[in-house]
Length: 279
Image 1 (cartoon, rainbow, N blue to C red):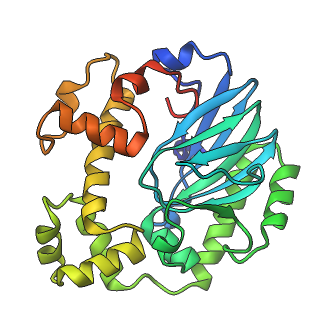
Image 2: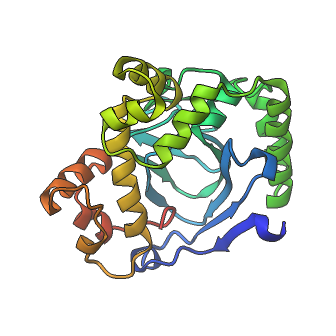
Image 3: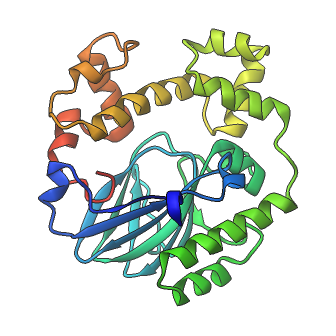
């Protein structure tokens, strides 16, 4: 796949290296025509028990083709193991568990969620549901095809074909959604600046943010500030994170409070546990 293969290696942080699960995470970029709509394709294999966090994300389609996989989102436990599953946009960490096996899938951007699924994002925010035929093809057919293939590149080709077909069959994103997505990437300082930049009232902004992203503007800005700092923490080599904090945090105590809000544990606890999947 050339440059489309982003990574194909074992996790590298110290905590992950101490984990016995022997987890391989392989990431590929989608076709260039899809990069406004899909983040990446992932293929995960683990030879032993795995437990890790799934960070807050926009949306995710997951296929567990070998072994049993389960997820916990807050206090919510799916009744059945994950097989062909749709994760809605989240503003909190989930936990994933497996005794060993293989899973694969793809992430969606907010514009991809709107374009491919056509479901208001807040209807499935912080929810995990069966994939069904949300992508225009029965999940059982997609799962059967992936289950027959044991090759990453075949999976990448299948995901490309699925999403390109969906792209051709759906209407373009409205201009307001594209503008909202662009402005959020620049991290407005507050809700008032956010609304002024897109030229709408606070009430209209709230309605549109919930529809496109799944959350209120204030919650979104808190979420993005946290994820920016978390992204820096994930790749740091040292265990001291004070220098990485976003300048909009008042102090370390403010950040610790936000970390517990979004991740369910303290930064120190997070850095001390193995992260075989997300490390």
